[in-house]
Length: 156
Image (cartoon, rainbow, N blue to C red; front, side, top):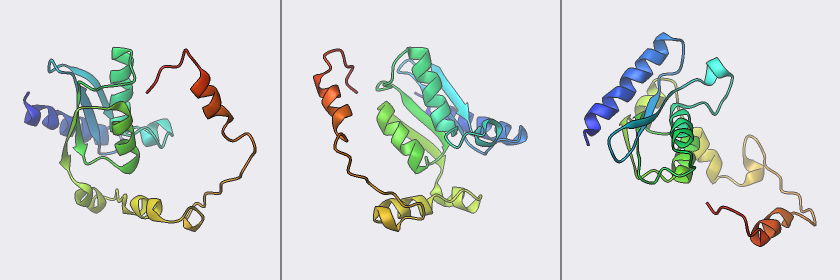
């Protein structure tokens, strides 16, 4: 597999997206046969969707194309080291590998600094800038109990 070729394509996607008033990020998902099955660029501002990152867009397209929620035989290429949200999506999609071009430092220098999110994750819930509060409801485990008993569930 020509990793440099695929990674270069993400940079082209990202640069083109900037020209179209989007964010400077691009990503593609490639299957085990070397075919691009998903691509995405940052559409946060165009879609008014804070989750519309390039990696998320590419993963969604690949999953839709393959009619699955797991991409275990696929590789994700992205123009920049993934943010914490995309990192989570990458793990949930179970891609085999990730190749990226720019790192977190270059992203931060370009105005996209995710360090505060990593710092927030490490804090106690109530000490975060957006505090999180757990309320102890008597039926809080009901969904998980139903899940455990559901014989038709599709594990993931």
